[in-house]
Each structure stands twice: as structure tokens, then as C-alpha cells.
Length: 166
Image (cartoon, rainbow, N blue to C red):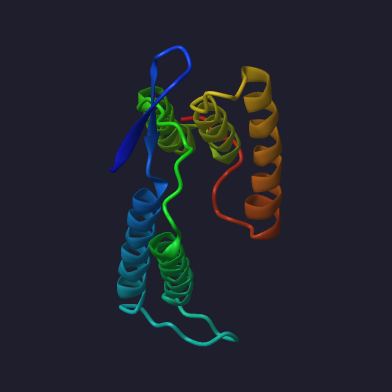
């Protein structure tokens, strides 16, 4: 990643990062993941819009992801380099919280049900944001849990119990 250094009034150095290259690689990664989803989805019957097969959704999401990745990469490729975004320290804390939330979702989803698993994944991952507070993470987790219960359990009748023990 290309970076430049500037001097502050106090004589300290501020390191700037070139976000153009990062955005380009992110777009290319999204393109590859989308193409992988399309490749995996075409192995199943795709069907049509009126009678969707099991491969329809992965192909549709993969195509949307690939198109979005292309758009991000093209914009990043032809955007002039601008200096001004400060380089932030590595986000080790955020990675730990996000990976921990995935583990909590797997364990609580298996032993506790949809409600505690959804609450845990949103709450724990929200704590990984350096600007988030515990109160805001609780509110976000409660709202997302209510939304997920309404969409997945009630509207779609997902075969995932709200609560279970063991």
C-alpha cells in the first residue's frame, strides 16, 4: 500500500495512505468472491423467476457481488490519487471481536436458538467498532434481533427454533 508522510506544525509526522489501491483490490476481491458464488450456484438447477431452483439465489447474489466489485474497481482505477486520509493503526481488537461473534453465533445457534445467537453476533461484533459504546451495541443488537425474528422466523418460517436448550 502506497503511503506518504507530511510534517505537522509541531514537527511530528502524519502518514497518509493511498486509498485508491486499497479500493481497487477490494473491488477485485469482491469480483472473485462473486464469480466463486456463481460457479458454485450453476452446479444446481437455477430455474426461473417463477420457479426458482436451489442455484438461483447463489447465482443472483454472486452476479450482484461481481457487478459491484467491477464498479468499485473501475471507480478506484480512474479516480485521481488524493492525499488526506490518515493511516490508522491495525484493527486487532476489531478482528478479535468479529471472529468471536462468529464463534458465539455458531455455538449459541446450535445450543440456544435464533434469538440468543442473533443477539450475540450483533452485540459482540458491534463492540469491535472503536467509536461504538456498549449502550449503542445493546440497542443495535436488540433492534437487529427483533428484525431477524420478524423476517426469518415469522415471515419466512425458517426452521430454526427461537429458543432451545442443549
